[in-house]
Image 1 (cartoon, rainbow, N blue to C red):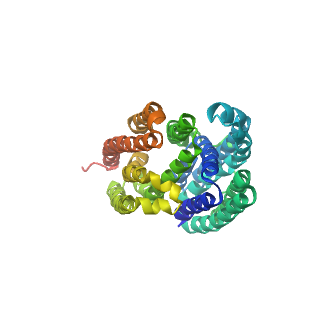
Image 2 (image 1 turned 90 degrees about the vertical axis):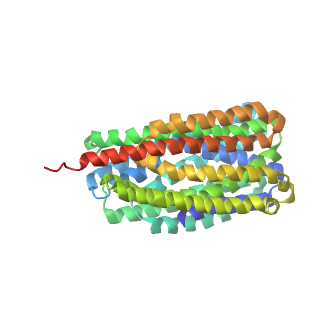
Image 3 (image 1 turned 90 degrees about the horizontal axis):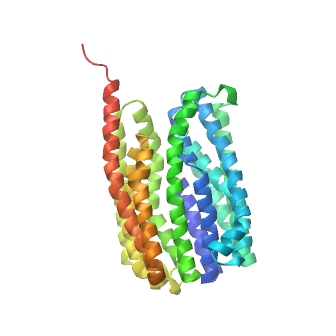
Length: 422
């Protein structure tokens, strides 16, 4: 419920903005919005998955739990402020030199105010997941999502592009505040207390950053690619209508991938607990359940959208129906990406994050960028969608191979802990 309400609010607010703004203006909004989102995604540096992993692992150890929460929280605060400053100071350069649209300088400066809250939500999500406070997470997400939709829509209705961006900033900040209040209420019941930084156990700090650094570097590979694709599309075509259509297609792909993310979020803490206690058979049952459920959900939903592509796009407006074939193409990428997410649970449990960067992410992102750079000028939107399909297939192949290695290492580690018989 938490994940569906969060992603659903993004979908609903974007749908309403499409109706309130014209095609090109919505393209500008999506480009500015994606810039803030991707900046936050880079700067959060995997703090969400790090918090979820170590909070769930140390939930029975108050001292270690306190260290994990305070370390991740301090990083979140500093990273959010850094992102705000960088995006605000470079807004003019991005608008004039990158997007070749000087009028976007002020919207980019405004949207930079949302970066701290976007980073904060990643940490708070991971914290509540690690504590298994899924009920609190669901309640806070549903309440904040309703408020987010209302504020963003009101901003677009009152002030066109600038109003929509102010609404996005206000809605994101309120969403983070609501989730933060709920997290504080949960932590009061656990009595985490304060941390003396001088007494921070060096072993725990090393363990956290041993996981977070490679996981965070993965975002430095992935996020720039996802940002560069619509940026190159904008520069090559100077057609913000194509950018708007691209945004809608990616939004629909995200809906198909969403169940995989929900399943992974719900089951990863259980898998981590099983691995920590060397119950590999239990962890394997969790992994198999995740893979089967993910494939079933993604395949059924993708097939439906592919068959009724024209009708689905017509909901957003008749001008979007010209991209029916592109929607059918990207559904293949959605299924491949969903399966890769379920396989990534095994990779994360075995902490094979460095291997993941070189075996799955780099080949995928280099392939995507090459396709977009070479073919976008001639084929426009279609080249961008083909890049997503090719990247998703390469990512799936790499994730499958690496997941088999991860399971082998987990079994080996478990066998070493079993005392030998006399």
